[in-house]
Length: 109
Length: 168
Image (cartoon, rainbow over the protein chains, first blue to last red):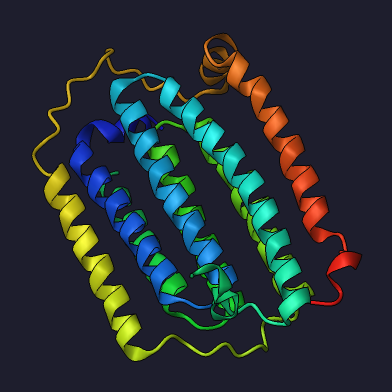
């Protein structure tokens, strides 16, 4: 138990930054890569969570719980975002009978 | 214990890549759940025990089940959606790689971290997070309930069958 709670002192903060940058890039790549709107929402969740991880890492390095409260607020916003986003997906499926984002290109021009 | 960090990071990156590259929506959700469980392990390593529990409950317990529920409700696991063209896909990967390199280069040497407080391993316990939440962040916490109500109303509005749009 003692090793787990003090393991963070052995890992440099740079490694957490690199990990969350990697996850954010993968999420952004997924948003550009996929056509399924549900997969795009999942990649958005990935990007949210990379920011969460970085906030928790900085909070742990400064020994300040404010960062963890921010992560809590981001989780609240993500839950609300997913509820609205998935209801938009249901509405889209009902109106155009598909979840392909290329069918929603009328907003592009 | 340092080994655990690299192990969890490898699981997270591989399953995140599989979320992007596997085709079936059900597999995407499963890989994302694996990624989130590994992230809960990271939170425990970061002494954020409360966040680890909330992350498991909220993300893997509620949000991912909601995704699965919508996929099964709309019967999307059989729907074939054509992929983007090869050029667009290659450009997406290149853009992601360049973005990654730029962020790495920007954050590589800029941060000199000097901790604000002396190290304690108890910041993530429920007592400490709760004290901070209800002393310094009480007003944002109450306002987030308004956000939730508006999200609920919005979800019901979108989910309701709209009789005026039948002619579209």
